[in-house]
Length: 156
Image (cartoon, rainbow, N blue to C red; front, side):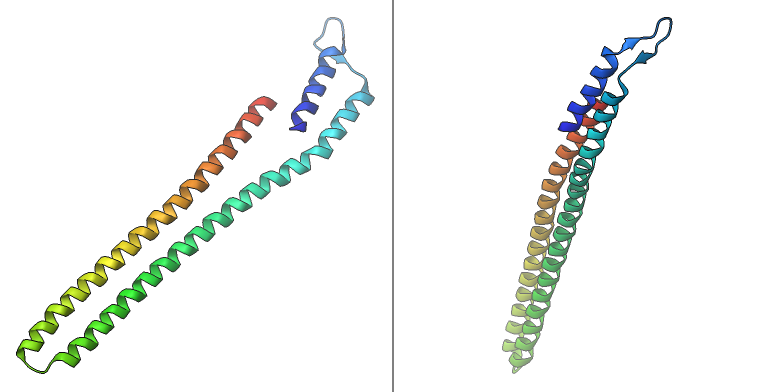
């Protein structure tokens, strides 16, 4: 990053300046100092824009993952509701006599169990998918944060 090079130039300028006797003060060429500071001012906004972009991208990815997870859960619930409605319709149509009624009740239970199982599987899959996406986002953010942290340490 060019900012760090410019800061090192600034440090070199301070270290190479003439020392004022009996003090911790240093005399430096003000034009050189202004030139380095101006270069820092010019480079700094680009790096701040990059940091903002990383932050905005993180928010967008998280929002997308949450929306996708919500949509998947809604779809799973709708599928389960549809399966239950279908089961109810089948039961109503099959209530002709005792044997058919028993079969319908058994089939209804099986359908409901299957619907609940599928709903749970879809829900778990949705959560796992959202968790995986968020884990990837967390890894990217952790790496970005580590870079920012290291850069700040270098600045200090």
